[in-house]
Image (cartoon, rainbow, N blue to C red; front, side, top):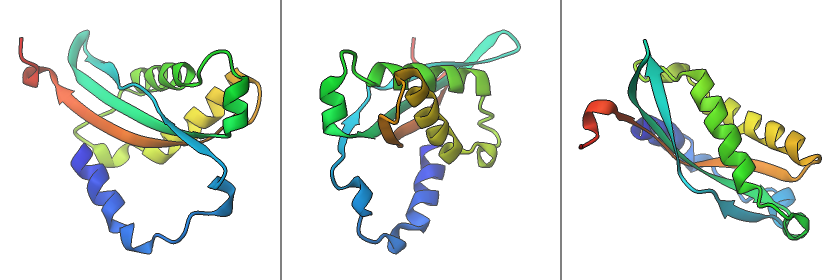
Length: 133
């Protein structure tokens, strides 16, 4: 999975221009990695390991009593668990839709336009047979 995202990401790397002005005043924070079990026919087939970076206004962050990380990882876990990612057909999973949905859901829970963007730091699949006992 990480190779697929890396190849897709690298394909557009030469087209990068300067960052839009709207992101200049934002702070970026990294969530903890989450491990989401993938279940098929009642058995765990493996785990999705994901970690995200989010962009937030520093002033909004200072006003929060609970860090937004917990909401982002909670929403990501719920979404990935329900989506049941098919790792035999990765081209079908829309990572951009995932991050857009995370922004929307977290902002709904926080009651405002707090999170400006969510980026993927890590998104890997570990099959059950690759996990040492």
